[in-house]
Length: 293
Ligand code: G1P
Image (cartoon, rainbow, N blue to C red):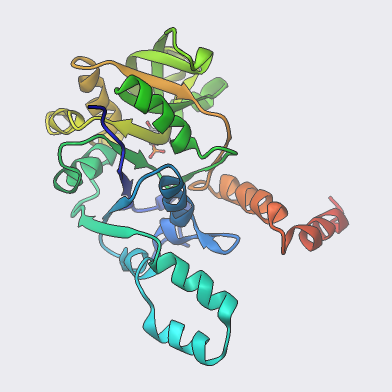
């Protein structure tokens, strides 16, 4: 019987240092792109890809994420009384969205450690991991594209993207080989992967992007890793151990990724998302055109 991806894990316990001071007292996952917190884009993508259980790995100071996906009685009551039905619909749609479970990562020891915290809630089934910082704008949601691959291959699948030049050193980097499948050149088999290698040592220009579908065997691997790049327990190192036991694939997804965890990436994403909005696009475009740049 084939396995289905029902659960999506969102590591959200990081300190958000790239976005200080905004993230001093506020989780970076709650920074809004136009009017929606970045983590909600990811949660909506997971749901649109068939996941019906969301697991958020949180840490200290992340209460507002839980509040965001919870019912807000006072706000709903006030909007009801003032007959603000449109806003009420928006607010209710978030809390009605889905079942969200939380698990705490007591210390920010790294992405690999964060994913390991979800072990009990995930259990013995394949699951998705989404890094909220990577906001991916795609016709078919990126995770959905990967679920299609998983359903056929029944092996772990990682999203990948070509990154030219020295910037590759900021990513997990893949060493791959071609594979024949109905997904054509977009699907490759992973031979090896290294977290944040030096540019001269990078095996390719294929970077790991923050969307993963993993088999539960990765948990044993993650409980056996040592501190890696940046002094952290790295998911990439856990997946490298998984490679010794199982085949893994990388998928060159169709879509545009924004690094919303980076100030410039966040600004670009804000502009692009605002331009696409029905209610804001036109006046915002006019405003931008009027800027003497
Ligand atoms: C994490 C992963 C890295 C991946 C990147 C994608 O790194 O460790 O392998 O390439 O996300 O955004 P971070 O950006 O948290 O340093």
